[in-house]
Image 1 (tube, rainbow, N blue to C red):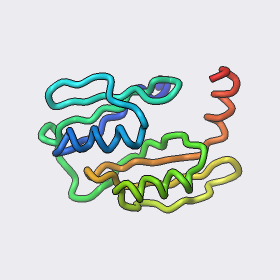
Image 2: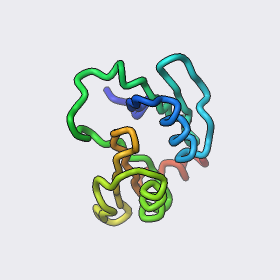
Image 3: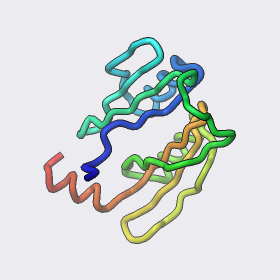
Amino acid sequence: MLNGFATQNVYAADIDAAAQWYTGVFGIEPYFRRPGYVEFRVGPYEHEFGIIDAAYRPDAPAAPGGPILYWQVDDVAATHEALLSSGASGFQPVTVRGEGFVTASVVDPFGNLLGVMENAHFVATRESLGV
């Protein structure tokens, strides 16, 4: 069965520009680089986030679509605004989904979907683990 998020990969035609943009978003440098691939380890669980050269992208869609991975943040509205200010385009506005659950999503400057979320379950799990 699925045990949790291990790695998210996105694609970019300009992998160096994408790595620089995500360095600003995550506030850390990539820990791993090789031709055609850059990877970050993000947050207390060191989730892997990879950027793959778009030349390797299978069946590129004409427009952003597909599943959205939502990253836990402390303030969705502020994070959404910061992403828009740094060059992302709006995809879904800040939306309250229920008590303790707020989402928003953007399209990064490279055509990938990026979601942010305030998630009460994530916070409770993190607190129970002392992270």
